[in-house]
Amino acid sequence: MAVHSPIDKTEALLGLKERLGDVIVLEEAVREEFKTDFGRVVHQVPGAVARCTSTEQVAEVVRFCREHGIVVVARGQGHTQTGQSTTDGGIVIDTAAMCKIHEIDAEGLFAQCDGGLVWRDLVAATVPLGLVPPVLTNNLGVSLAGTVSVAGLGVASYRYGTQADNAIELEVVTGTGEVVVCSREQNADLYNAVRCGFGQFGIITRVKMRLRRCKQKVRMYHLLYDELDTFMDDADFVMRPENHDRFHTLESRCAACPIFTKSIGEGLTLGEGQQLYAYWMYPMFLTVEYDEGENPDDAAVLDGLKHYRHLRTEEYTQLGFCNRLVPIFDLWHRSGNWEMHHPWVETTLTWDMARELIPTVLESFPPQALGPGGHILLWPARSDNSDVPLFMYPEGATNLMGFGILPAVPTQFLDQALSQLEMFHELTVAYGGKRYLSGWISFKTPEDWENHFGAEKWALIKDAKRRFDPDGLLNPGFFQFE
Image 1 (cartoon, one colour):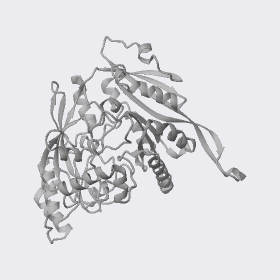
Image 2 (cartoon, rainbow, N blue to C red):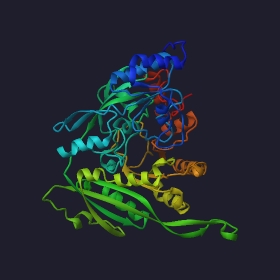
Image 3 (tube, helix red, strand yellow):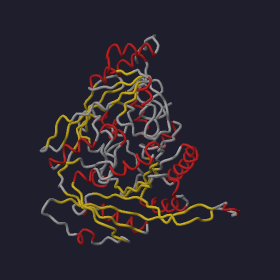
Image 4 (cartoon, rainbow, N blue to C red):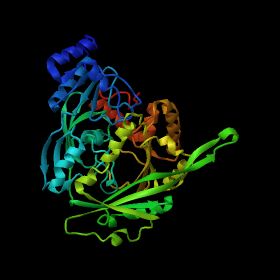
């Protein structure tokens, strides 16, 4: 246990700045920039920002903070939604400057990178070499360490698992300030704690990420389904291992076709008891990769699928496909979506749960509640391609369905939205679903966390916290310990 110095926090932070100079930023205007995250629900101003450029600097900051009892939170691009990447009065370690690619090994199929590197920069370096990370999230403007810390899901996860599964080796600064290299073969207990560990056990400073060989062109088929059961039958077909050479990625969502108003209760005087409703459809986007001179047989690729409409076929370069959602994010910025609140709620269901729950939720969901650019996400997945212990999903089924409500909420409707999203959370848990922890998480007690992880894993988590962060300095307040 560390022995805390008797000097107060302000004096301690001044002393740290004297030691590390411009790495430590105390100006209020800068600290204000780090007071919230992408969720924009939790606001708390840090006492200092540490703009570290090396693992050694991160370790020195952690050791100093341990000595003086100061909370430490690591922050990549701040895409969390429950305030995980900020702190009230503590130090935010801004890893954005730790963004070097140290090595790309085309034979060994891996890249060695700083944890603060954003995925877009990694992809820009690997795709010209005919290489790409197996799993990419839709937003490439987030950091490698950040997504490995939450799992990291993408349109190829049904084949390759999470981004955390594809992190071969990690360099970590623990809560004691020790620098440890870990993998499946070396210091596996730490490796299994920090993957999907939300910064509770250590700060990831370097990532050795698996790559795969890729072709330079991508063809995407836009398919539309008017029935959930048919959509899920085709998703099951696409995900089967025998079809992995036929399709490369699978992307989907729920699409609202607003119709008119419907009655939601008694007393229809002056329009009371009326609510806008939608007819929901299910787009599916499938891709194949190919090289110049090749021409995929579209009929053969789509043979056996039972879509309602084949809407269009799009052609991309591999790099263009990886960045296909950039125009949507630009639109979010222009429309004001990006500055709104984002209490996203995502859950993982078994196939049977999804067939029952999704229509129930959509039947009563008013499409305008999503706000500008908000959407309802589906991500079909499999349970047999991930070995990340802390990535939780319902047990006992191979096929899984991710189901998420991802709104953009104006401030005046935030309280109402949080109340409704809490009801959605409780419903999914009642169905046996497991929350994907990157979004808005309302767990309030240790019992909530134990229910999520299960008693056995929760005991391992508490043990890992005692071992790797014995003073509880790293990212306190998210996981609720006794």
